[in-house]
Amino acid sequence: MPFTTTRKVRFEHCDPAGIVFYPRYFEMLNACIEDWFEERLGRSFGQIHVEGGHAVPTARCEVRFTAPSRIGDPLALALRPRRLGRSSLDLEIDISSGAEARLHADFTLVHIAQATGRPETWPEALRRAIAADIATTVTEGEAPHGT
Image (spheres, rainbow, N blue to C red):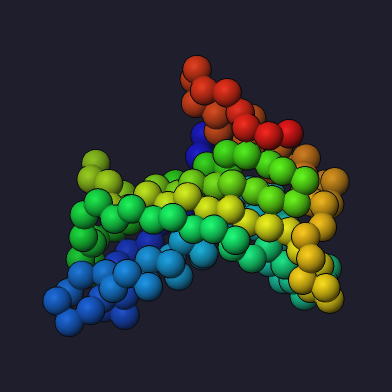
């Protein structure tokens, strides 16, 4: 089952035409990832970045916009982890409003040491949590990626 969170499109998200200004989607996407780490994996960004001296920056992000979102629209953000590498993680997030798709994003995050900026192996507890979530979000007939 994907991790799902919701957002309401507010005036602050919109351009003068009243539709979501595309950089605001990136803020929503990042908030979804941050919520997933804390709520599903049990590790907040504060624990990872501040207490742990690590970070999970985005190494790749590909986005396809399929329909505009307007002030007041309720948005559902559905995150699915897809592949877990030694220090990387591939995710996808779909944003929809009701039955209408609004955006699809593919991400690669990398677990790094802040002191060096170099990739580091995921901590074992976090690796187990991510792997378990991948196992529960794989759709029927689809093989999981990575280990």
